[in-house]
Image (cartoon, rainbow, N blue to C red; front, side):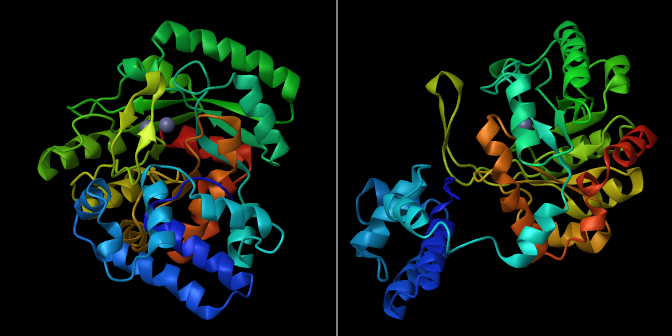
Length: 352
Ligand SMILES: [Zn+2]
Ligand SMILES: [Zn+2]
């Protein structure tokens, strides 16, 4: 695993690897302590400390841990961590329960190709999914309104459906499920025609704008999308970004906090309308946060463990989501992408 992690998670990962390598306990403890220090910082403080180069003034943070924090904060894999990962690759398989959870997944319901803001053609994404042992992958490129992500107009989506149909003939029994990551408008409507949404196998509905709206407005907006009979999966529900990330055209997005909404109302509506809550595995998202994931479990939601991959290698990120699912007691049978394709499609069709 060498994907970027937020600073505290990167430090814990280093501690974990050192421990598995039977390094002296005081070295392991140094990284755990630094992780706890980072966790305890008030919002914005880490940013300020890094900017003013005063990170190592903090008790519990030294040159080595400090360097790892700075690199992780910049969205990179810390050099030290990268070296450890390489050295101990064979020593640190996934924890058994996480590996078991992951092996129960048959596909991925949220992926992007170069038709929107992904970096690779549909075929390459599909071939990577096949190599991972998936039985299906839903292609969910962005909807028209997301022009920064080259969202697909109705016409382009129609054309994509033909391309997918041709690929499916070639790649059978593997199956590319047709789909969309549909933007949720401010008024809760979905950003594509009803007719097209009705023809797609999988509809992931996500909020991508006005993320700092007041809780009441955001709740109403999300409720409408969750209740929409076309919606199958509620994508990255809080919209948070844990670490900065590069976007197309070199734009850099800064971390941002969770959107505010009435989580109990939203997850309750997901149960009522048969909409799965996405467990987004992207390292900068890891959405929903654990406390909300635990709430969704408690309320009886269904889930989809997705990668939101924008490149073939990212299809391997599902372990991130599985780890969090295991931690919060998600039952694999409640995860819709553990189901065979036919069963899954019956469910998405029934939901509309
Ligand atoms: Zn999205
Ligand atoms: Zn996406």
